[in-house]
Image 1: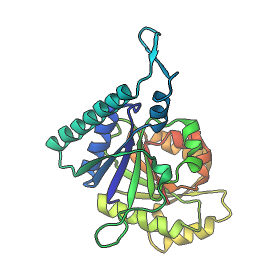
Image 2 (image 1 turned 45 degrees about the vertical axis):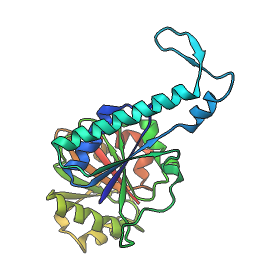
Image 3 (image 1 turned 90 degrees about the vertical axis):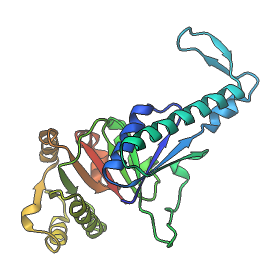
Image 4 (image 1 turned 180 degrees about the vertical axis):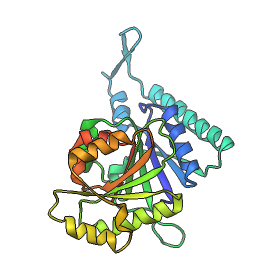
Length: 262
């Protein structure tokens, strides 16, 4: 993880979530690339002669004006910039704030640095986990790198859990988990689906790289209870973007934080 990408717009939950993203990046000593999305659909609506906006306070409608929308976007952009500057004054943070009219769905290739090497971007989503959101992740996330789901107010991680259920990418994910554990000086536990047809293959992949005592076979029921019981000790759950767990929202919903590996 070399750089965190964080997308936000004027309808985003706002400053609190951005502060969390900035603090998380500073804590892990990685660059934060914040991208402010200008809603082009909203701008197109404002250019229509019959466009209207309704006040949440009074319920009254008034013409939707393009210059008013631009002003609101500019104010939001300035607020977010001020937030990042404030965090950087108190913590060591390397950050940038860009304006874009596209979303992460439009990205097809990861960025490269001056040496032509992949920057290894991680898309950060700070939100309370919602079952329907988690279940829909495989369909709407096209980000080329890893995707992190981070709860609001999560404490620093004390443990890493890697759930392996995809044999084709298991070796790569195991190596990534080991590097992360070594860098963060955190204990790493490997979790394997007890009912998987690939259980022995997955176990062999791990035993070639890590002590057998770090491997635990779990059923879906056991995993749900394990994640619930460890809520008092914040952990990071690593799993594949194609993991079957993503279709079991209730299971992933109990996690402190998730890192979806490509």
